[in-house]
Amino acid sequence: MKTTVIITNDMGNGTLLTVHCKSKDNDLGTHDIAEFASYSFSFRPNLFLTTLFFCSFAWQNEFKHFDVYVDKRDNRRCYPKCEWFIRPQGPCYKKSDGQEVCFPWNK
Image (cartoon, rainbow, N blue to C red; front, side, top):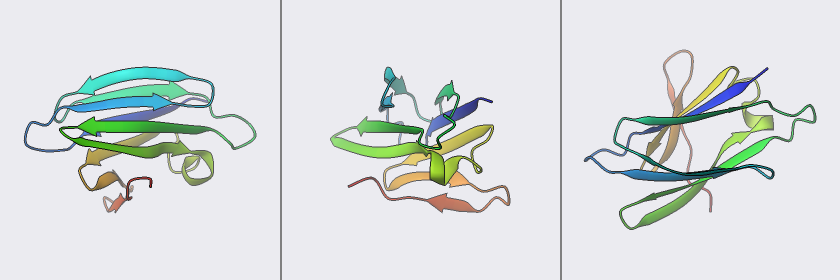
């Protein structure tokens, strides 16, 4: 079964967001996302529960990283889709009850 990761630019102020996502085996390339627009990709998580996709995010003079799919964290929450709203302070998602959960950027 496939999982889809959706990355939405929620930076504000018309900020262009440049995203570069990878896994151990796949480099998905660089994508520019306009404000409120989205970029998505789909994959099949492996049977060993070790699937990991990580992205770099660049805007203005900032450069950050975040793991957009970590199997142990996301396999139940993100099936069939895992949607992230990217903000200057970090990525957020909305739970099924509408409550937001936000994460800090990777160190």
